[in-house]
Length: 129
Image (cartoon, helix red, strand yellow):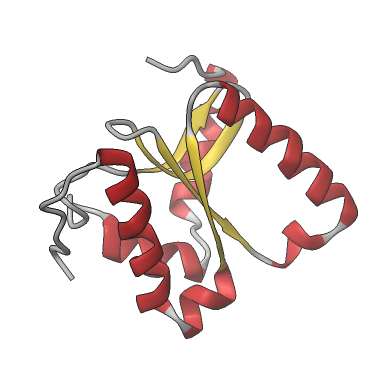
């Protein structure tokens, strides 16, 4: 089990209630075990960070990058955060929110590829779309 900062519970709850439009769209496609019967969590606290989505069974984090992620400060913060997550043995699948709006199928194909690589399951199939 991953350690987490309990002081972030209120913020994570607030973020779940106030999802971005891109998060809502992707959540609708991955919730309720629609992706290879895998459970994903929204706004999951890991250490001192809150990730957009997390699948514990394959240790996969999904991060949606909006406009704020492209400033110099945000890029530095994301790099530190990503290194922390990777040091825990987690894989990160980064998606641009514009891709969710304009190329959702491509985003989902990339996600299924990450799931496939994580599970190394040759009978990999898309389910629940």
